[in-house]
Image 1: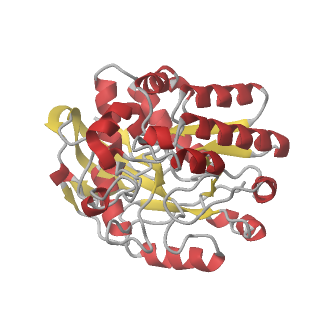
Image 2: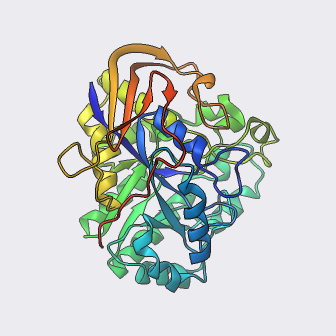
Image 3: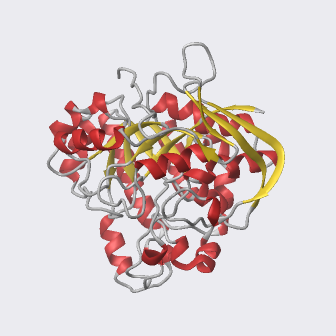
Length: 386
């Protein structure tokens, strides 16, 4: 079976500053093995991608490593409002963290949030991590070891409501990362009815895992925002038709880091290599239609982020192709993972559909469990004018 290469619009490949757990070579190799031929990488690195200098340094660093095509996000801060706007044409989107997560990027005050919404080109995606910082501090101080209690749904709902109101006021395009609850989806759909230009992402983590899995996995299931209740997980499937993109939020950490006590263990779970296998398996089982998966993992990401040569297998687009045996059943294992972290929460899961070959821009890059592409063969994507 022939599929278009998937686009993962939400990865953290840790370059620069976190190469012990991932870099652009290992991350893009994992993507390739999972049938992902284009990735968009987040800015919360060390140093963060929050100035022109840091952006150019990162572009230079990753250019010689990537084996799939890629784009980069720019990170919002209190003080880079004008600079972000001038660099918009060179990046996939701007990421604005309304709540603390991995790294130092954070914007909590109304004035810089509003000015970013107002100043960044209105038709270029501004992507929010919608968790409210004040409520995160309050609930975090209560000392719960349950991640869904220390970062509860209300924190996401507060921040999302704020972002939607500002997007409505400024008339800008807004994309909401890792939406996790029914109420968040309802808020987004209500905003759409009022004319707000908002799209949203759901991750495979929140589609296929819930808070009971986090209790089973311990820190290996710790992620921001957390794995939610089984009822919220079920709601994501009920609202599948409303979802715009499925991005993995691939965020690897080493086993040693995850094995620390709860309050010291970092949040984040790898996922780029299991994106296509999990969703193809869901389609094979009749849970969703394969064409609906492709819409959210190929067509919509290319459209939303303005990826000029991506999004379809047609004349004028890049020949990013996945050949898959739709009948082959296999078990996902930690040993298969090409991420430096070397683990997946989906180890032991049996899936139907085995990737045989992957082509990037027409060149055979992966075949029979072997990466053939060399570092530097991946290219930065071209962006449509916005």
